[in-house]
Image 1 (tube, rainbow, N blue to C red):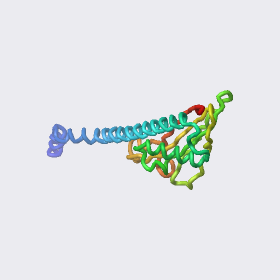
Image 2 (image 1 turned 120 degrees about the vertical axis):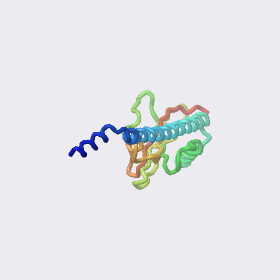
Image 3 (image 1 turned 90 degrees about the vertical axis):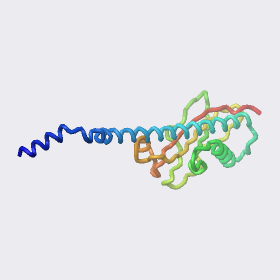
Image 4 (image 1 turned 135 degrees about the vertical axis):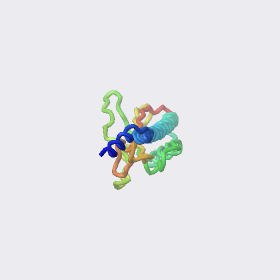
Length: 182
């Protein structure tokens, strides 16, 4: 029994392995913070790229009234393609981007619904919703939704993002503009 107690005393007094224990306790927290930081950086990069592309495209629409074809489908595709060309960091932009453009009456404001129209790879594709071209001096609201795959979907921020059935999260940007007269 004395040998066992002596061995336990030596083990308790020993300093070997303390750094390993500290490493084992702190390493998962540091990795969690690192992966969340990388995910947040990519979310911010994608969102700022999307917002800039939408702003540049809306500026072209606003100042170029009457230059686009009158067919709504062609306008929708032209606007979508222009945004995707300018939003270089958004992967599979043409498949994952959805536009919603509506006319608003500033004197009888109703606002947009909270139900954002986005794509979902886990469901059948839906037709274009609420895309109406405006005339001169009309207030238009353009809402754009891009779906992005998280880099680290099972850890950190990537795990806590609200995702659809295909595991993608939505980046939404909304802008308002008035069609300038020709």
